Length: 109
Image 1: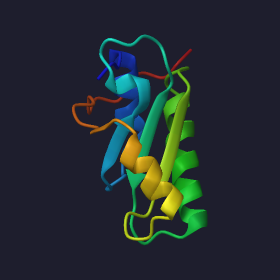
Image 2: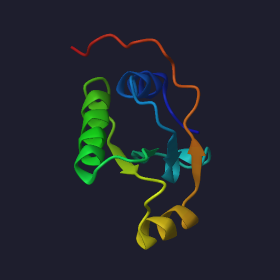
Image 3: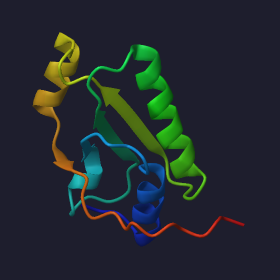
Image 4: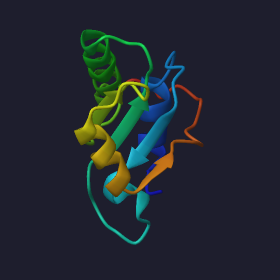
């Protein structure tokens, strides 16, 4: 998976306190590809639609406070997927997000 050290640190910072499985998908799972934003799926069972939105926003804002790369965060309830979400998950390439550095990054200037 293609992530710079800064992107890994920003993800670790943004994911603090998130105790749900997270997967990365899209062009970043292809080591031969170039460029592309960071696309994440957080599988958070039992959250309301509003809570899923707030979690997505919190992760994206925290990430962007450290790193200027574009990030899309989709929060889904794995026990209550719509047919569109199931279809989406069946066709994308995705990998569990592991190995992000636990170190907190320095604040941006």
